[in-house]
Every structure is written in C-alpha cells, then in structure tokens.
Image (cartoon, rainbow, N blue to C red):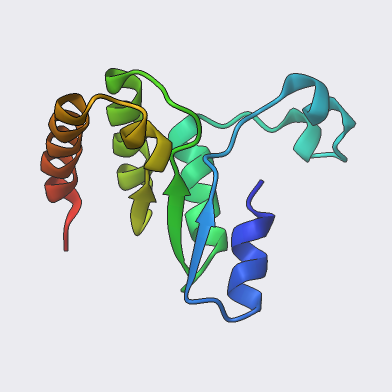
Length: 116
C-alpha cells in the first residue's frame, strides 16, 4: 500500500497524488507474510504512506463522492497523518454550488489547525 509513495521518492518526485489506502480482506490473504496479517487504522495506513514517501510530498485524492461528514473525516485523517494536501475534485463538483462552498469552508477551517 505504501509502495507508490516509496517509488515516487526513489524516483525523485517532488509530489505524488495517491488514493487513501484501503484494506481488502481477500486481497490481504494473498499477500506474503507478514503483510497478510497487517491491521492498521485509517490514520496509521495514511501515516505509513507519508513516511514511505520520505521527502516526496503526498496529496490524497478524494475519490468518488461521499457525504459531507465522511469527506471532512477523510480530510482530518489525512491531515493528522501528515499529508501535504488534498485533491477533492468530484467531491466538490458533484455538489450543488452552495453546498460545495460550505463543505470547502469547513475543510479549510479544519486544515488551518494543521498548517505550519
């Protein structure tokens, strides 16, 4: 799951856009030991990706449209794990304009707690 961040770092990338790690039980069973028994929280999984990326900044993609609360929680998890930023295209474009602005304001306000 963190190999994309590691490879981006090894290739000298300044920035990499990745999906938030997800665990699929069936796919995990096919992985070699010790990865087939790896259990990480969403926060731990994103933090592992950020650590593996080294000096390469990590942006997390928003993926398909999710609820306002789930999107804000996803943003919080990512920021706490140390990502450089978020790319939430469809999660904004597929909302009504006013709703997208409200969610953007909430995420922006939350992100200010993590600024340098």
